[in-house]
Image (cartoon, rainbow, N blue to C red):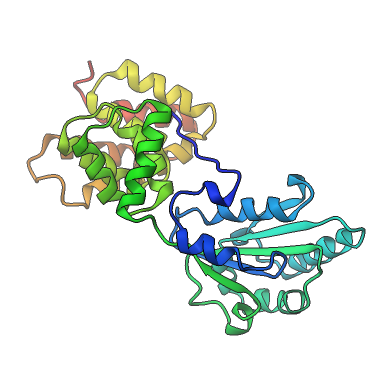
Length: 309
């Protein structure tokens, strides 16, 4: 099950009462920076605001600053966005993960003049999880707004809304665990909710939610759960589906990261059978590097246990 939540207007967002009130006083077009923890909805909010400013959604350009490290490329981007807007076409540039520019102070300096004298048809929106390493001169160019996690009540309302819309079976204990583990982060609620659909065992619920908070790929969490069940046909079916969109090596590395997080979490005891299985799987995945990648990955998973059903 894939749960999505794509509000088209700011007023449709759950919670964020103070943020909405403050945003209503902000002049669109003045450089804006949204600050908050990962998964709290900054990028989604930036897209909504961008669509309100632009004549067309096609004029909203989103850039991950982790990929924007070349100074010449940044100058070209700034030139292109200003050149195309002289004909009256409004454009929005969303600088996602803008804290990545901290790796190079010159990369921030390139933006100072365009941000100080913004083109009226160009709206720059920056999103960041941590502004501490950004230059004061860079930060001063922006109107800065905090995007905070949902309160417990807002989280409860959000979960109820999603559960009803997607027919998720969630009991009172499951919902309480979900609220506690997700700590008001909408992105984590969206990822975790389908994983505990119809799950009633408290230990299993807590473990699934712990995994969801560690790993960003819910498909790997599902694969992990099925490997534990020990039914090879189900494992192979999931692997085949994942390989349609993800490379074998990406799956191998992602699963190793997931297993490493679990094995160091203190969840397992020394004598735990499950711990032994996952340790073996980690070793097989580590040794499964190289060509042929697909065959090595499947063999590594199969070799992790001798009691497949």
